[in-house]
Length: 232
Image (cartoon, rainbow, N blue to C red; front, side):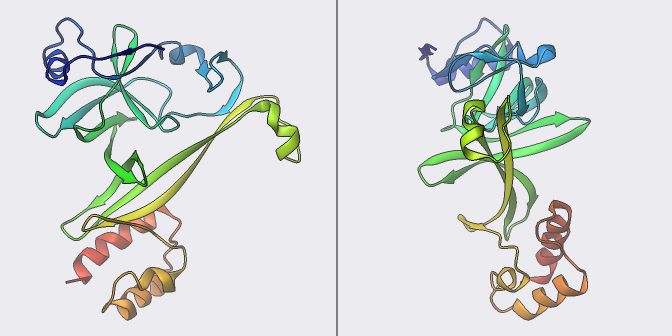
């Protein structure tokens, strides 16, 4: 794949006005075959028609918007989020253009009539995209999805039962972003309560009395809504 480098400002002009394409630093990939045919491109560089799972949030272009740090919000885009490559793509003439991460503040996609919101998150030496489940002045609740690619040829060696297909295996973890510190949420109610010094007893009591499942996205959203009002 060739990398094309142009000015950021020119790309923003293209996205805002839908004029002649101008592309900014990022890999250009043909994702059009994903729609309707179910063909994915694995990390060995060739197309496969049989696979399990998916590297994408959704295997189709979705309407959405992006918010750039110095340009604001741009609506009415077609987007695909690739968890495996940790890239957000914009559709243009059947091609996908990777949105530069350095200037990306937030983005959203509409799936099944529901808006799903994401923000860039720094994890170690890389930038990933976290789904924003709850936001307040005190903290953000994030879900970060990781995808592992499993080569079909490796199944006999690493799994008890062989699988003839390549697999993209998704797993989600929940985090709290508090004052710029990214904290992985523990599944233990006791350890979770300790994340809120001075309110440990009240938090632990709430979790126990409400029978909160800390691995449940729904329960976590409800809990953070409660904590937002409970914690000063």
